[in-house]
Figure 1: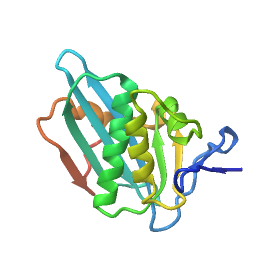
Figure 2: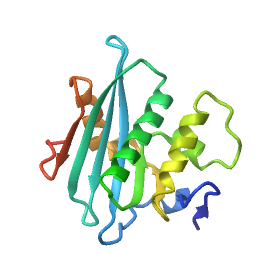
Figure 3: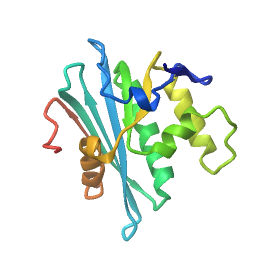
Figure 4: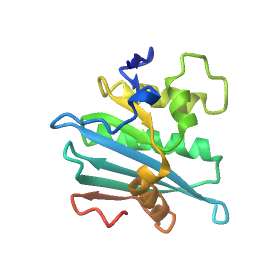
Length: 170
């Protein structure tokens, strides 16, 4: 049974329900990831949108200057991806990331006093734009499309968005 998060319409999917969720027609699944190149002090954010039939319909690959901790990079990538979906008015049903710690922090009912607290609160506010969205952790092997776009961003100078013609990702 899913538990409602007190901050927004986000639902937690318990471990027993982590089988692939069917996305309702005319809604989308968002996969996000981050990559870090410490040598270049550069991060890459990747996001992929899949439709209710499981087809990739759009992608985002964004380079960002900085050398932050992986959890902070994952959180910033999720926030940037949510803002992208809000801007293009994409109705999300499911959001997947390969950072279990991030999912736990966003869904936590406890006050967060870490350095990440403001970003977590921004994510929660962005999630309120998507009623009844499901946020869940997936293994990296199930998040390879977003991971590949995040890696690709490390070699880019500017943000790239794709609509329908997303490069080969897996």
